[in-house]
Length: 73
Image (cartoon, rainbow, N blue to C red; front, side, top):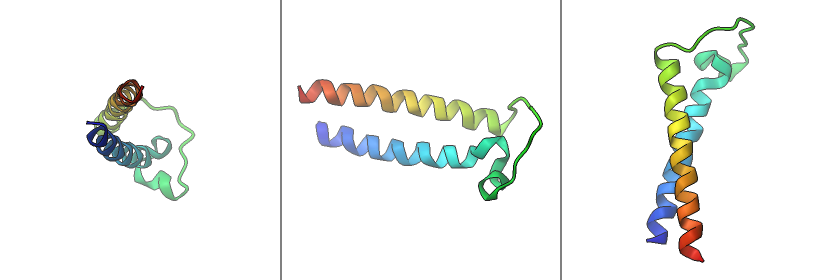
């Protein structure tokens, strides 16, 4: 059981990293290479979906970490 939780956490951490890189300061993929936007914008479309997916995956990762700590005790 513990090994499967660890594998799921590894997969989630990779997915979270990818989602964070895709967001890159709200500038889309151009932000990865140094592009910066000084204008405040609301998140719409794919940016909003990426933001919400990131929050969801982080919450799932956190809950799984708590479960894995509880199992090992």
